[in-house]
Length: 601
Image (cartoon, rainbow, N blue to C red; front, side):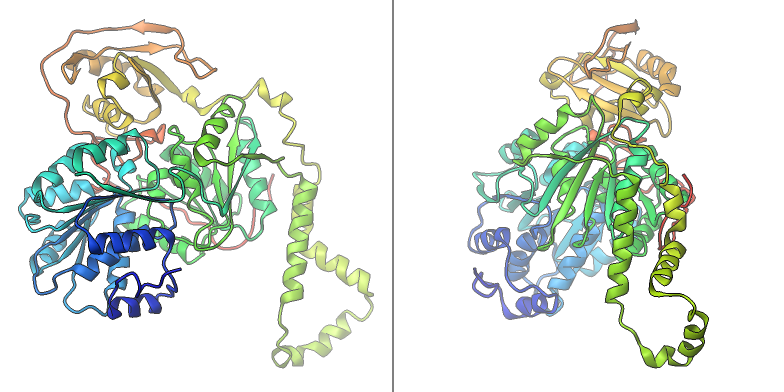
């Protein structure tokens, strides 16, 4: 294995890495760092989440940066605010012994004036989200004519979020002589399209196989119905007393509901999604990183860039609409040499998606039974006993109290003392699970199991993959109709010549009226929508309520989604603003304290 010095990095950088605890480079760093240092050829790099991509592209840039010039020499784009902040902070850490290296991070939800002042002072490296970066270019506050490196990090997610127009604008502002570095954890066709359109004969390097899951993560699934999904989630948490996990949900509404329920039931949990202000998001993430909370409930996009290396579990409350995103989710655990578990809760109709995911991650899901009450109580008890055994006694601190304690307990023998100790700690949990039913018996629930999609209306639209439609563009098209301020968009299915999308049932009539009144087109093609009947098997269903309308002139505007959500977000509320623009207003927050559980059924 190489050392960082052998990769060609100078002493001040190596000293900073040593301070940070970096001992040797990862596979992607071994391959990328010397390639970038020694060549100006564009680079297309695949690396699984948690393998050190940020260091792989930022260290060689720091090695080559011209500190005598204050011009912007590197522009690094990332899909979310959280990831941009993480990258900016990492680069500052890497460069702490390099004189005159300045880094500015630009993103929505934070003062643009302060970001402009930082740029005016001079920054060789700028890290930004696409929307805010373009805003600053348009204001002539960010000048990229001297850029030597353009880095596209998490390129697949930027496309999913509908940022193609912004990527085009940034590329147009940069010189043709720049070196483009594309890093991604998955390589769907859209990312390959970026490479074809934006790069010149790129060199390709990989760390592992493309889209494959990390070797340090095992994958399990639990069969549930909609009625048992949340109780099963709680039992999994209870079975693992020291759980430190992210629970992924498809929509912001679902995220907040699950978090609120967990907090109400006594769990140490909180929510992270796009309805929160930037200050609230920073607060939640700070509490999670410090382990003040044990469980973070999050949407896919909100959790991007959350740099936590000690997660024990990732729990998929529901699978993402785009199955490639499962790789990103599961990659949150099993990082930095640790072992992790990725758990999926699936009902009958969702189970088929597991086979497709297995092909992508090159691993099999292990079917696991929802734990019984007896199993949970036994696990909790043994965990407590292990902690008692491991507890160090500071006799000098308690010595003066021991005589009176011994006197109080003198009539209890060893067995009675243990029984009372266990009962004191576990009577409530024992009572809670005393007559708990077997959640693995799904027969009684199947007839009553209803998906939360029952709150959504499913629409047919007459454009599809052959029209170059993707979920991000469809979200933009819907938002452009100004149906509602925070309309919720549900599952999206893009097929070859037509597609389906779901919208909050309360906006059903407004959606039909808005499309009829605006008569939009998509790349010159008239757009028609119809209400469909839901097909529980997952197909399109028979259409009804048809209200076609004629085309009017007008182009397709910029794609936007409320939280810069992955287009596959399957139901986050989206408003007509990009991800990295400030959120309007904020949700009241309710934070669970540290410590254990509910004591109510």
